Amino acid sequence: MSVLKNAADVLRCFGNDCPDLTVSDVVKRLGMPKANASRLLKAMREARMLETIGDTHRHRPGRLMLDLAAAYRRSSILIGRASEVVAGVSSSFGHTGYISVRDGQEVTAVADFQGTNTLRVVSNIGRRLPAHLSATGRSLLARLSEDEVLELYAGHRAMADLPAQLAKVRRQGYAYSSQEATPGVDAIAIAVADVLTDEAVSLCIVYPHALVDAEGRDQMIAALGTGAARIAEDLGDRAFVAPGFDRKDTLE
Image (cartoon, rainbow, N blue to C red; front, side, top):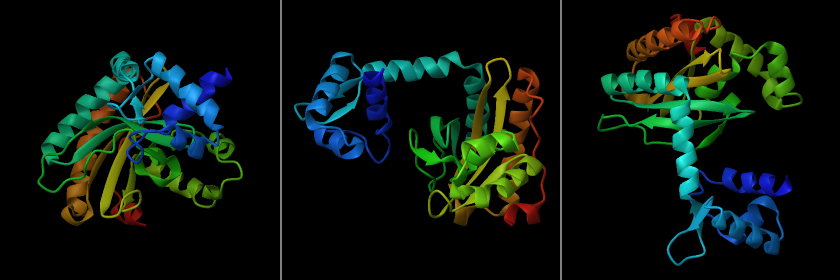
């Protein structure tokens, strides 16, 4: 079991800020003895979980991981339905869209749809963010009960503000962030779930702060909310709250 955990820890290192790893990187990031790190990466290469880049000592995720990622997306009706909605909204407004999932205190995008505007937010697929510090994360956390949030963030300094933030998300039906995860970038996010599989995803649109006014933002929230409401009805998500528009509440 420890080998599997160590392999998972290595895979979690990958992201936009870490596209490849060397043995030395693993030693530094995970505090693992060099000999152990070398053996682990070798075993992961042999299992096709990793592959080397050309003739270098740098490693990137292997073909097996790509196959698994594709299989994961195909196996989820919810991700498929959410992707249709976000792709449509992204195409209509020209801004980049994401489908994200939560893992504990983090969220990560599992699908993205590039915007068509000349000035647009680039893809952050695979980038992990603290859930409480992003619109996607707060939209998903708001689906938890207060007791579940308290257990998840027990002793965390986020609990000073998080309950009030999540209460607002539950009231509004969507989460909004302005230049929070990335300077100059705003985001709107709406979460929906499949009760049969107990999956929940966040449908998100990100856009340059300077290009979209409050009216434009509300139009995107309405479009995203309409699509999410259809998914909620079809998949039996009774906890879904359709977005409402109280601009004062949004901007507080």
